[in-house]
Length: 220
Image 1 (cartoon, one colour):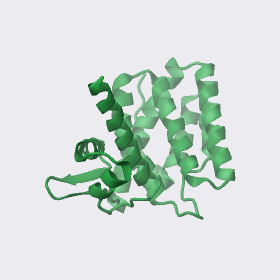
Image 2 (tube, rainbow, N blue to C red):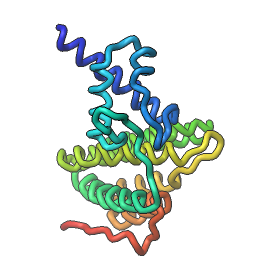
Image 3 (tube, helix red, strand yellow):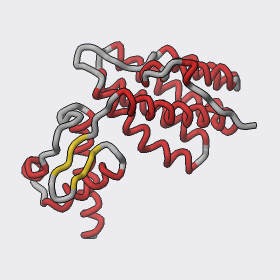
Image 4 (spheres, rainbow, N blue to C red):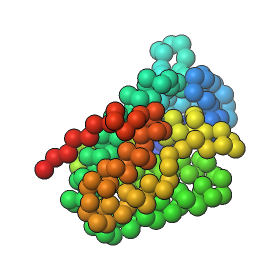
């Protein structure tokens, strides 16, 4: 029972710190004040350190042993690098989703797209980012490829951080949400070319990539 409680506490602290980062309470490039988190949550140093190591393994913080931990930063080159991997993997996920997914699966995607749209209309940018991320991760899950799903987890978390980083409280800087519907249309029609075009239009500009720079490999 003690181990179980420790695991629950660790998840709680991890979720708390991640939420601070993904809502810009701790911004990119800022150090994480572990002592302050310990005091705010009333926990010991151990679960905080474990949470920080977990976030470091997921790639959204940089851990300097015995010194400090800070949230990662982005520049144009790292944004493009992330984008090339993200778009390539999304396109592969879409191809597998067409092969393995059902219309019921795509209905779930449609619901997430609508929640994303609703958040946008209410100017709730953090909720919009959350549902956009869930839309794309659900697409990956529909692919049915466990290796692809695991590889995408860190990429999706970095993308969510990038979206948060580039969004001001009054001005969103997100992807073209109209392309969610275009992706859905292509999935329902089992039209891979249509889906791939929509994914590139949806994600390319956000990652500073031009259409001609995005090379997608498909598999038969």
